[in-house]
Length: 485
Ligand code: SAM
Ligand code: SF4
Image (cartoon, rainbow, N blue to C red; front, side, top):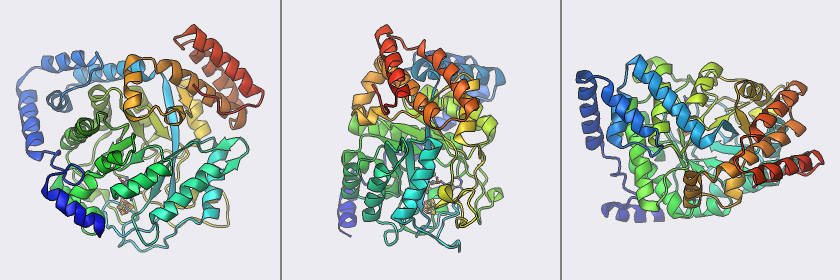
């Protein structure tokens, strides 16, 4: 009640911690109308010029982004995809960072029309006990995971911050063999500055919250009741998190709720607003697409995004914000994920479950989890995904070093932009992948992975760092773990 009262007062003063007027719908609509008009009347040459400028990896303006989003010409799209791939290669090399979601609780007092966990859906809900969390963590560690995204419905009665704090400290504590979760990202409902301070103290990595849709009218239609219905409070959550000292925040749109052209421009406006207030934009962007779920009939959503448009969205984002991580989840099919990796995705989930208790119960007959939040499309194990990535020339990474070395927020960006991060990320990817090969890989992936490591060692720019990486690889073979730059 106290923060709501303060919130109301601040709202009157247009405080970006509570007032989302940085999402300027009129301006976005004007930019889109102009770009649509241009795309209908001019040759694609102007788009090629925009793509050409983007090669410098200095980002795009909202105007340029709008123009590219209306591109329908196959040849120009081909050029867009090649350029996105080249920018990704320049900044991230061939590294792909792994994570897994961990669903803690399916209790939810919201009624989001797209979600299987919404309040009106009747099913047996569950919140993991600390023992059950431990079982989940052991199962995740046995798959090789080091980085998690915690997920839960919003229910202050069933899943409050005290519970989350206990869950996070339990997660950091549990060890299975050499396994340890080293970074816990958190995807929970918008909350107060005070609560974000507590999450920061609990040593979370990134605070992630998806906007779902930036379009106010659609937002209010798909959120008929519950605290999440408050567009301003939800949209300003990242501002509050950053003002509470959380350096890394993640944004996202649930594609399929409203016109993707609008959503992408709004997402970038949000990123710009954060950069303006805090000197650094979001750490990651997520691009989930709407999936079937209990009581969710996709045919009733008129703005579903095609595979081709999703590829365009990922490529345009890679050009628009070259240094921001782009995340893809197992909502997408393996073949499409492969294409998206090449276009700019830098992080992926694998072996995921969207069930509360889904990891420990997998393959066991005793308990089957209650209900998933939505259906998944890529059900391969991390080992299978890794085999595939290695065959395609990517370097799987389980790195969590930046956040543990304090390279977050505005400490990270100058390093990334100067290119010196290459001498940290590439060795760290190799070292964490080696740990995976030693502790978790199947025999086939182990030999494939050793070849991958040999190829990627050669790409560490500094000879001195290369030699040090080789020395540390040997230390890992001798039994040490968690060696990072
Ligand atoms: N309950 C919090 C919230 O809504 O912000 C935490 C995250 S919720 C467990 C994770 C995300 O799942 C939501 O932000 C939403 O974008 C996504 N989601 C919900 N229903 C979905 C569906 N049917 N298909 C794909 N993603 C969905
Ligand atoms: Fe609850 Fe989040 Fe699902 Fe909405 S999206 S119903 S808030 S779990």
